[in-house]
Length: 295
Image (cartoon, rainbow, N blue to C red; front, side, top):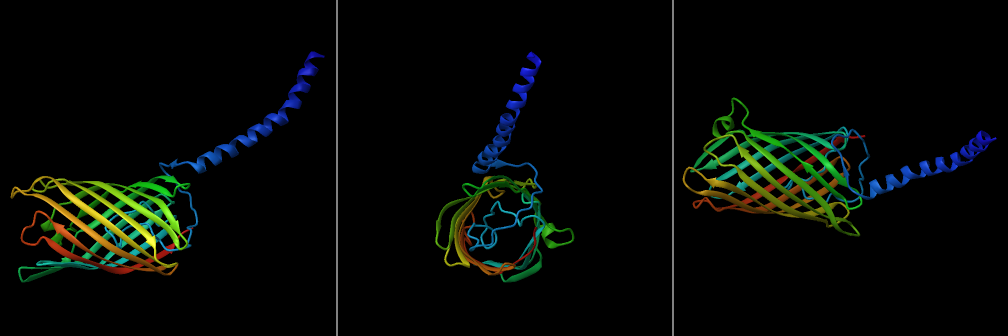
């Protein structure tokens, strides 16, 4: 009889326990979605929200990098023309910036420009320094539209080109953050911040610290305006006993033609505190972004 009573009690209690067990994961899911989420590796594929302009400050048209990726199996190809105009002038046209998304959190990048430099009345041209990198967006908080990523990159001269002889490889180690700070009827107001340690592989060149901050907001349903300030500071004096430092401000625009084609442009001014002969340059950027693939 005692066994029968215990068995009956267990059978009566099991539906209640099952209901409780069933409800708890839902609560946990809600908590996880409401808060931030750290991810070491992810192959999850989510469709991107295509409403409104892209207002997150990023490159191009700016110099600052944002934590976003092209998305799962997505391609992003930027075709860029840029120039710095001063006593000495340089142009990169075209620069091909090719990016591919693995899952939603990983981005692979490779870029290389054709470079034209005019200095002291002489003009040089050729393939400029190439850059490869891998971006890992390891934190995403959808409740605040906040994302954080690391983006190690290697800048180097391609063997056999003049860039390989003129400069040594540089390892860039930036941390990127973007978050939403407001919204209008036309879209979100976003900010992006970067901080980076750039490691030189040459004993003649000092390591540098770089920082950047940008804000972007919509002008219309298809056009966004972005403003940024950046700086790069040497951690020691160069061979001439001068500590190199560069400051730069940019105003950029990004417009959507359709879901696969965007245009962009920027104008800015840079100031090199260590170059007494050619301290200021006007900076120009223009180009197109092609998007393909995706989930």
